[in-house]
Image (cartoon, rainbow, N blue to C red; front, top):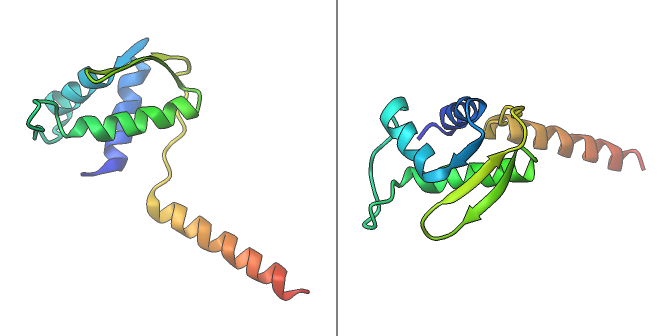
Length: 110
């Protein structure tokens, strides 16, 4: 699964909504954006897990506010339409390597 595309598609969806249902969003992404329609034995899309993980990140970033979280669905209010572009794992790894190099350089000065 291309997580970067998932994040961009979720951001696009959020821009047009005032409230988000993780289940409805998952189904929307499957029907309109070509994500896998594979399901768990419960009938819930497997994509749902990734959607909720990203929506919870947006809660921490103060983009969403949780309304309801239960075994059936997770629902959120949209607080801000401004979503920072997610950092790809390669970019994050490069940043971490640069930070480590900076620490190594500082330590070698003493």
